[in-house]
Length: 116
Image 1 (tube, rainbow, N blue to C red):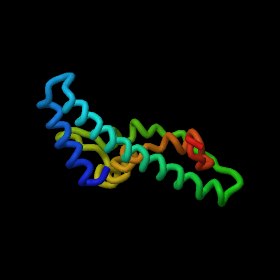
Image 2 (cartoon, rainbow, N blue to C red):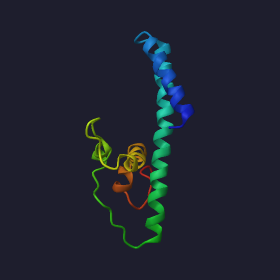
Image 3 (tube, rainbow, N blue to C red):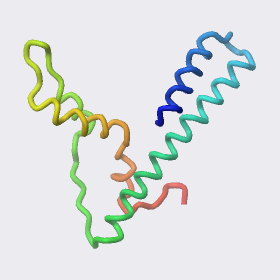
Image 4 (tube, rainbow, N blue to C red):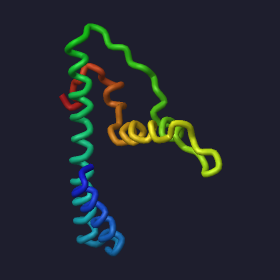
């Protein structure tokens, strides 16, 4: 999500909180929020398709590692008394794992788009 989209989405959430349930304006706000998230979802899917297509075209065989991506952000966690190990090195990759969403690559490593 770009900075502009995040800002607009936050503003729409605030506006949504003020609307009366069932109103037409509330429905318009929900629709606008859906458009933003739809663009983000499409962008993520396109990235995964492109990222998977290149290795699939260049190699005859692709091996996928079964990583527990859900647990990776927790590996850098810790407490104030006992901080995690190598936290600074894990911070960047852990943020990227959560944003990109690699599960479409695992589902279709050939890079084909699910809608085709």
